[in-house]
Length: 83
Image 1 (cartoon, rainbow, N blue to C red):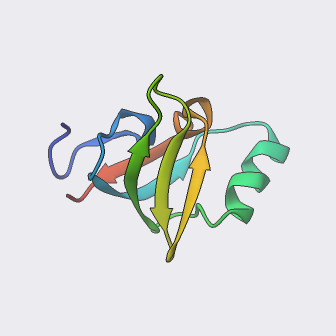
Image 2 (image 1 turned 120 degrees about the vertical axis):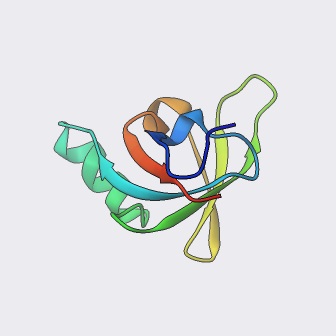
């Protein structure tokens, strides 16, 4: 498990950990816009809810709803661990 205050990718967190989004590291404007449209913006708190048996996709909780995203997309999201 990552420690509180540690900076990492969202894909590195374990089930139950919570983090705050710092930035999205994606040059492809279409993919970046898609992530932003899903509510993944700077400062939002995200919690890892479930991880599929083979490790992909990952179920996250943010802004009062759950979202299932591929591990590849989560690797683009830089976060600070808050719990």
